[in-house]
Amino acid sequence: MDSIINKIAANIHDFSVSDQSFTRCRKLNPTDLIKLILNMGAGSLNSEIFHAFPNVNSRMTASAFEQQKAKLKPECFKEIMLELSRANDALQLLDNKYLVVAIDGSDFDQPFNPKSENIFQGKDGPRWGLECAILE
Image 1 (cartoon, rainbow, N blue to C red):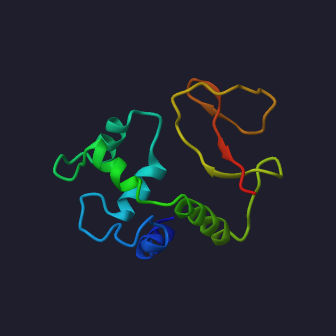
Image 2 (cartoon, rainbow, N blue to C red):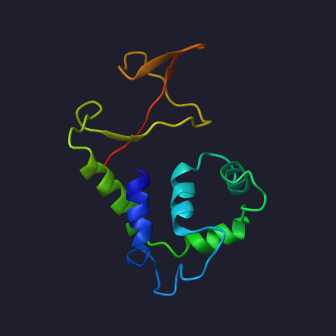
Image 3 (cartoon, rainbow, N blue to C red):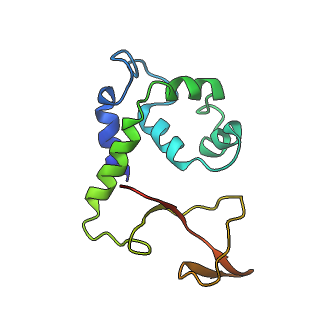
């Protein structure tokens, strides 16, 4: 994933809204911006920034994050997902139709299906544990 993100960041002008975007040195460079967006959880924006950048000197404001994010085209993330799919030549699909691209620790309760094959046994009992995305 890092090599895909680095490749996108090296060609960031193909994925930015303007040729002037990402030309100045900022606290939040394209690589860190993309990683932050992909790694965000269900917390508030300030909380996510705090967890991603625990060093106060490297942390940016929520406003600065939003300004940098606005410079990216959605095609940036589509390209990342396409490259990720191409990199895996032995795709294993969930239920023969879903490509799992993330398994996260979301804070919301997900519907529990005791008949599902995708249950893992945790210390507190069985839990539903997959977040699935369909790539068509």
